[in-house]
Length: 445
View 1 (cartoon, one colour):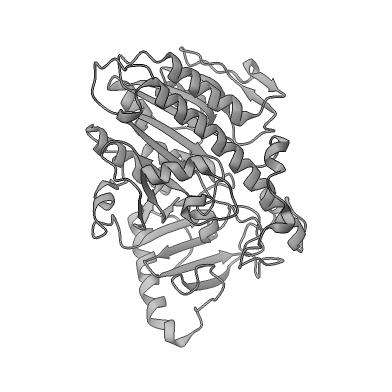
View 2: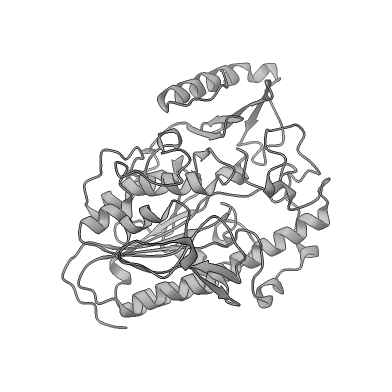
């Protein structure tokens, strides 16, 4: 291990973002089928937020607004359009840290425009501007200190997997880091997003026939949710079959295990750099994925499998080997990091710090949580119940779930007279959220 040079005592940040990784895909948090030893170790070293959510999506590519909310701390309807770019009056957390003297390094997927990337990072490598691509032929840009990234100037990394490329870029950064200023290293994977192709050795680890179907597996969704013909839903034929879904789950787990292996190498490089003790590590996913649950394949819905995400933080000031079920958003990470680092928070940030919830279960940042998908779907949940309202082709539909008794969201209670009071209360909460967030949805509650 190298001895660190210390000229600025502020913590470093290693930010690791997965693409389409669902909340329930970490072994240490209860999944006995997937293999994630390095994420398991990170959970033991830090605090895992087991009820972390995205606010939803205003675009079929849910990751674009999700990442814009993460970077800016803004809510869904206070973004510029769907997050294609980030305006200068919504400063991103890497951008602010750079202005405060941090060395900021970025690699991997960036779905929010080249100009916003250029504002955030003083260094970088292997940058993918887009939403998805073949992992073994990813079109990548070299870092340009002038921020000029014309589409024609990318290089195709033929034959090398994106997960390997991006992780190795961060490893090199950590190996070369001189320690004279605190750093932010932003590692944004394109895995486990489809196409779910990775090295054979990872695929060989998972036999589809040995995997369990989720309890809410269905051959098709029971009604039109407004987005049944989106690209994601075409990845498996209808009606869904157990064999198809098990195969997709096996490929998904293979991608996640590959990802976990490379995260382990990054964490080992951080340890070797001598800066691990003063580095906040954040691991998160940008949205979830259905993969056969409720008869769906994608993330264009408001069930837990699509709006709940993994979120683990470790490092100075963060309790170890702890879980929190506080209702939090990815957009709360911005305020959390700045409290841990000791930086003032820009006025544009709407998220709230999760630090109090790390230290006390009584300090939850909110009692209810709102999610949305385009104009079709709105939801609100509290500690026990979730209400989802649909408006598709002028047809209304309501679902109400008792998440404590029915975590798989299979028993709709909206027509149960015993649930009438709960339904009325949550509809009132939903209406208040829509007002507070300037939600333009035509869904009337």
